[in-house]
Image 1 (tube, rainbow, N blue to C red):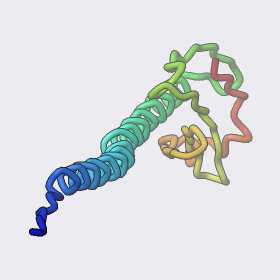
Image 2: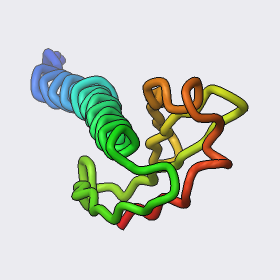
Image 3: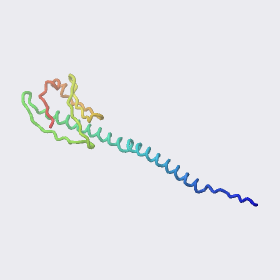
Image 4: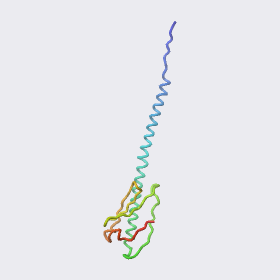
Length: 138
């Protein structure tokens, strides 16, 4: 009796294993790439945009305040409106007027990113913000 030896063919199994391993590796790399792209290409430029917008808003408020301050009589009142954007990059923000002795500044922030802009020379010429009439930003 002659024995018949069969050569086992593992090509089908190895191709399936190779396909599954390469596919799973690519899926893992794709997930990691999504997190990196979100942080680097979306959040970074959005934060830069918000910072520069906050600086522009602070400069605009500072210039308007100094202009009004220059024409305001010492014992009079001037009423004015500042038109500011409602949102920057889809988020709300605050405009805060702060000062210490002769240095006053405007802080524009959303809680995580902020910009501070000096109010040009108001405190040096007539005292601190505490002596100025109340400013209401609408």
